[in-house]
Length: 246
Image 1 (cartoon, rainbow, N blue to C red):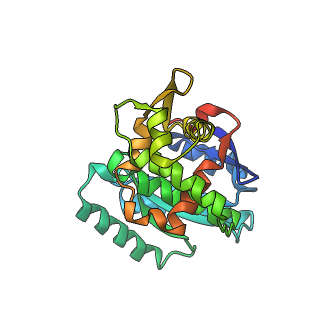
Image 2 (image 1 turned 45 degrees about the vertical axis):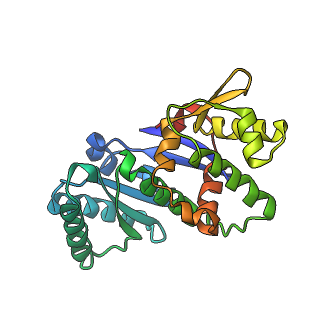
Image 3 (image 1 turned 90 degrees about the vertical axis):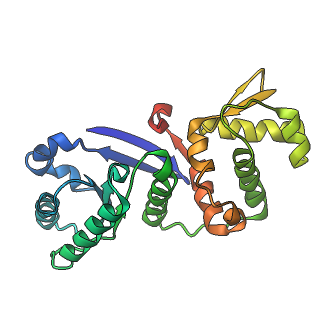
C-alpha cells in the first residue's frame, strides 16, 4: 500500500493506493483500511470480465455493510481503454451500468479512463472533479485568479515540444514585466509543465504540459469551468514532490 498526502485548497487529503495483486488482503485481514475513507475509486482494466468486476464490488459491499459506511462515494474506472476499440469500451461500460442497476450498492459514476496522451486530459480532469466534489468546493474565481490562470494556460497552449522559448518573448507577447514572467514560469515549473534554464531566461514545456495542450479545448479558455479545473491543479502541493510524477 502506498500512501500519498497532498495539500489541496488548504485541505489535506491522503490517497491509499491499494495494489490490485493484494486484493485478497484488503478484503480480509486489512479491510479496516476502508473504515475512515470518504471515497473509493475501483480501477479495473477494460478487458476484465463483468463477472470478475461484480464479484469484486460484492466484496466492497460486504465491507461497507460491516462498518456501516453508508455515506462513502464509489467511482468505477474502466482503465486502459487505449488497448481496446471505442465501440468495445462503450459496450463494456453500458453493460456494466445495466448490471449495476440490480446491484444493492449505489455508485457515483462509471468512467472510461487511460493515462495515454490521447485520453490523459479527460482522465485527469475527471479525477480533479471527483476531488472538488469530495471537498464540496464551490470555487468562484476573482479577477486576479482569472488573469493568473489564463496566462499560465496561454503559455502552455502557445508552446510546443521540444522548442526553446525566451523569457523576453513571453513578456512582450503577454505584456508582462520580467518579475511577472518569472512568477508564471516558477509556478509552471513547480507543476512540472516546463523546465527553465539560464536563471529563467529560457524554458521548454514538458511532455506533461503536452498532455494538456493537445486536447485542451481552446474555445473554452474563457469558460469558468475549465479555469476552475486548472486552478485546482495549481493548488495541489504534495508533501513529497515525487508523488506528482507521471
